[in-house]
Image 1 (cartoon, rainbow, N blue to C red):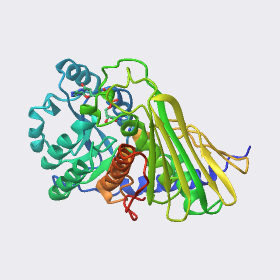
Image 2: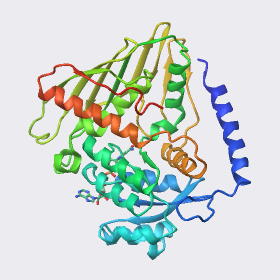
Image 3: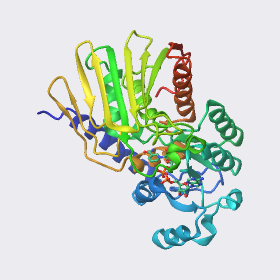
Image 4: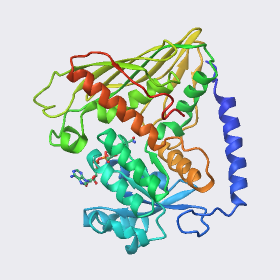
Length: 376
Ligand code: NAD
């Protein structure tokens, strides 16, 4: 088996080293305070599983940002985090006094890692406090909320990104490269699965629509939607969808399994399956002259890939969240591209809403008018 991506990786690596050397000689200005900063202070809002086991450890490895503050409703957690990460008292907030973060120059970026229905409120408050914003996925629980977040960030003149970590990691970037360079010709079919088997804690917020906004589609479905879009290089122009329920006693309030089909402008067809009732994690793209696949495609890595040429796609593993947060920090510091802008999160929510509408209306195909919105 040949490793096709070594050359690509090496060239990216050398570009990265060059960029670091350049950055080291360059006093970056922080847009919010006017003070020169080379590393931005990040405050995590919500210290649950994702913040604890992924984001905080990743922030110990980032080059262009660092963990500077926390926002939590649980005083016991504040003490543990203060000791573990050496966070000064003045950088610790609760949900009520959060808005006073406006006067804290140590915090440049607020990262909202709360249940989905709380994203909009805290992102808007962060923007009003003059902080750049990372909003976890799904961006919000409606398109209207996405619009409100984008408007608040625009008004405040702060940058906004969605926690779509995969855009910063090399396997996904390799898929995007093969699609855009037509390595195997034009895309004809793309298929993506994203889901896991949920069996415990029926009281968890992900199964409570008032906090999650929806079930598998809101949680894992956005990965599958993302996958068929970067796996085809286009936004869909139609969608049709179906819902399946086999454990209604457990999934009382939220969708268990959804499948959806897409048509793309070049005639390609897409298919997604997302579930809270099956472990699925794959992206497959079929082109005129071959195919490529990531399996797994959307977990924290290492991911794995192969192509119809018998080649494996393989890269050294790094924390995806480290790469993601450094990408956003570089976007703020030196105006490099925002690889997961708010517009991308809004586009995905337009598709999510169309899928729910299609199911509610009996599966009739719905037209989408997304143009190039959110493509990167
Ligand atoms: P979690 O349940 O582990 O943590 C949620 C946090 O929110 C906890 O600290 C909890 O105390 C706090 N909270 C505040 N008000 C709450 C309320 N009313 N009900 C429940 N919790 C409340 O969840 P998580 O897995 O950390 O997910 C948080 C966000 O991060 C979600 O939007 C999720 O979709 C997203 N997420 C993203 C990824 C990714 O790979 N990008 C992975 C996991 C989670």
